Image (cartoon, rainbow, N blue to C red):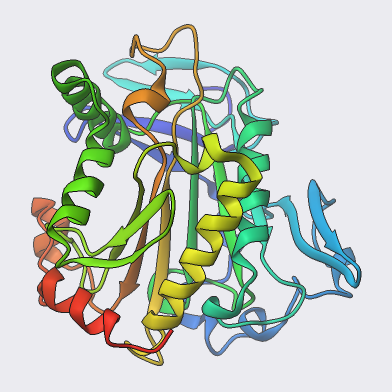
Length: 331
């Protein structure tokens, strides 16, 4: 390896997983001190502070100015400047930290998560996904939102992150392999079948729109977590109208979730269809068997030793009870 101080990945053969090493992120505000730090309260992402962020990648405007902006992450895990190379050091294997790491600034002013203009945020994420798909060296696009200190956010202003990776993460890859095996056996997408079965049963359903259904999954890993899955065509296939419909549904669910706890953090996890690549090990169009879906995860409990060592999560709220409680809340 040429430069161990640059961002790169190292492979753990024992855990069969890649670990990202990003020495430059040591300057990132630390989660445990962020609440009391100037970095947490200083609103670098607010309108009027555009000069404090890296050069803008994209934006959506309305009559009053920008609504959503995208900028490079200052503390990025991967970077376009990293070499597209890999190698071995005897027993060990490494890969250059090539990729894209972007911040989606979701509002020109501080807002609660349920107050955001979700249709426009989702449309911006969709457009960035399509753009990053054009880079043949990016194999997977990971999108996530950390809201609140409990969820891993290091600044208070609402934002999401987009990470374009040079490989499909092993956890996602195993899910895609399972989805492909199901598709080859049944001829249908696994997550769509799950969504339709939840719709048929009804007891865990929180919301439904024309193309999407929101429910507390049968095997929810976290209390009050909600999955939004397609009933047919997925969000990326539906275009801007899909962003609008999904955004309205998300805002409704988040307004219900605001009653869970005033101090709860939230993670929103996007499981996006991988870009189609000629060298993909999957011999079908990804969207046929792995359509995009989302998980909204309130952070009401800590991931501790048992979860970390076993991979088994402990959920203290039955999903049926969570769905009933959410349905009883005002939208």
